[in-house]
Image (cartoon, rainbow, N blue to C red; front, top):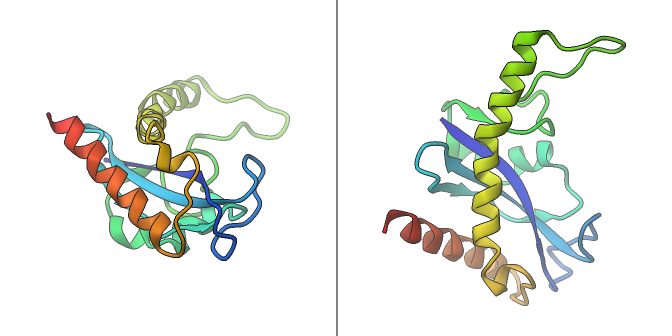
Length: 152
């Protein structure tokens, strides 16, 4: 089972970055991790930071890298075929099994947030000054370093 989520990387290259709600100019990176080992499986191409995760999933190449593997995501990926949490119906409440499923889903999906926290301890991902494909190569390098640290 895989987990996917998008993260914003502040970038100074305005040709690939756009203003987003969290940073001045940033790029959106889709990162796919293995749920058991917490190793980074794939990193999508960077897209402008104002692109939502649902659209970035298709355009970044992360979807093609995953193939037909069962992948879970947060509620920002409706209609993509990914496993997302149940939504509360209008004017109603979730059933008990749906609430339990959402709780388990949230606990498993937290692993990708922990991976982001570890990857963003590297200064290059807090303020990337690289041009063009440099942001993508930096993200791939940090993902490789993360995987090396996880396996040792």
